[in-house]
Image (cartoon, rainbow, N blue to C red; front, side):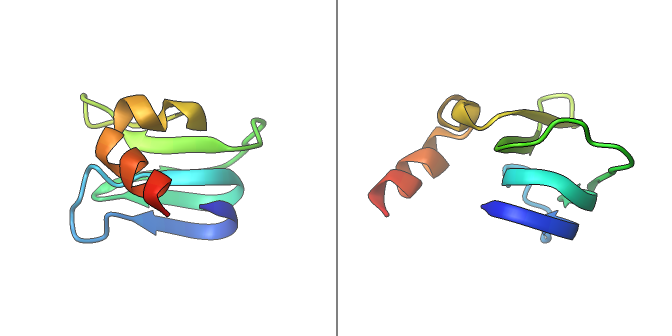
Length: 80
């Protein structure tokens, strides 16, 4: 979570439930499990949530959707 740049990898061991949360506007590439997206021109900035949707496509949305998309992860974060 947080501000990042360069290559961002989550779910490196094939975990398609992994997420990337934070400002990815300065990233050059995002990988979750075996899904890759090259970032050429990201106009949207701020706190985003990147995840693999039900169609196995990398999708980006508002970070407030974490509770809806990954409830178990959200509960773990609340405990911290």
